[in-house]
Image (cartoon, rainbow, N blue to C red):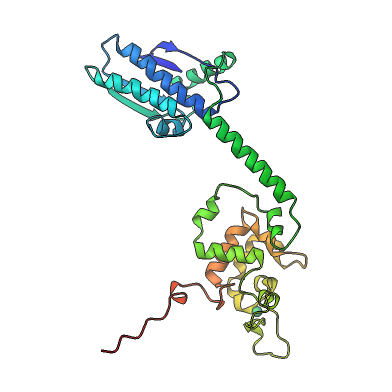
Length: 300
Ligand SMILES: [Zn+2]
């Protein structure tokens, strides 16, 4: 932490954060400590404004949050010092701003330099809640990864070979409409509106693809590969897939390879949206398709 007054450094301080705390803790307690220093300097008089800068956007938003969170103590201390300053005449202007890190900002570079020097200082923090939460999340993730690696290879688990497991929803998940994401999941698991699924589950629906309707002597089983690679009903939109996945027509290609997050997954989403593949009727989804028909008006 470094403190300037009219362009001159008047205070700098570095504390060790120890091995049982997080970067977030260090940022939060640095702000709390800066508030204490600001209070001391303000008490000397002749100050009309105080500005806090941090390169941690999460600390900038959490330091003024008094509710329960992993670094609540730092917030409580910060708010207490700031309240004391604001209550004391001449009631200065106080701002708290985010400043980009490692971008040549003078005060930020100086604070970084001092912080590096202070890493060997004795720790002022005991084991923190943020650290315990971080460790708990790590061990849950590791246990989950071990479990995933030990799963039997099935049609459903093949997906995990190309799509990394994550406890945080991906940007793709958040930006994809729910109906499309549902069909994507069905495409990978094989549990969807396909002939192979109807057969496997002994359902009454016809397992034959409508594209072979004109040739009942040579019906084509409506498999995922048939829909993705060759079905005439989707010729118009298949280029969306083939442009992103060059090997899609290879005999050894399998649908789970579409789960590669970079190019093929967005292409699959677009293909499903435009073509309507893997919907019950095989036509682009529209909300009217799932709404119940309007009721007859009641007799007078
Ligand atoms: Zn077909």
